[in-house]
Image (cartoon, rainbow, N blue to C red; front, side, top):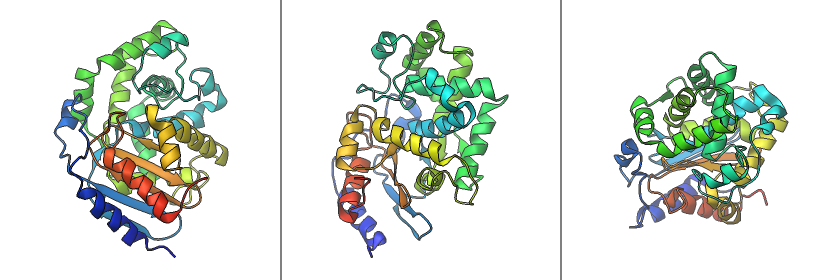
Length: 304
């Protein structure tokens, strides 16, 4: 049996020595303040032991990883009607790309790019009286942890600098694919991105996606079909215009965020989360991508 703690330690020690750790997301002022040397890994093995190394227990801004949680909520509520408003195809473009949205007349290519996640946010605003409270409740239930919360400073920082997201939301509104006001939808969207979690909490929260929809406390959070479909979207669309590269190098469904976090999973086996704030040119964690490629190579763990 593999010595998972030793594997994590080896990966951590090797990558920590690298001089090039990528660049933090300085276009969001609050994220620009994060120490680029931070690095953590946490492994949650389904019904087995868990392992952590480095800054695995330090909270960070999960950013676009939150799109998986809002997608799960909207899919559970809307069912297949959701796909009338957002597609499930890879975009092959950056997460905030506008031209494709206009070309496809206001139907986002998938729910894990910004335009798609903004439509999903709009769905939740139409469903709940207090969507921020409902999202927080949902994520806390998934992770079995009531300490998870929003960071209002990060949300405000994004509100003040999120010009492209305002452009995306207005374009969606012009095509009739936004039911609520642009300001209300983006207020919720910026708050969901500001959620702060540790690698441990994220691995725990992604447990149902690796366990046929059943949470850590044995509650059914999603149907097996919903979990399967969301995993498929993560595999093909979870890393912006680097999704193919991640599938090729790592071979797992997953989701990244510009806060430097990456979550990946092998159904019925494990969830692994990495955090390193320095990003590559595609907006994915530089060390995180390397760490996950090394992990699947060393453990021979992959969906393929």
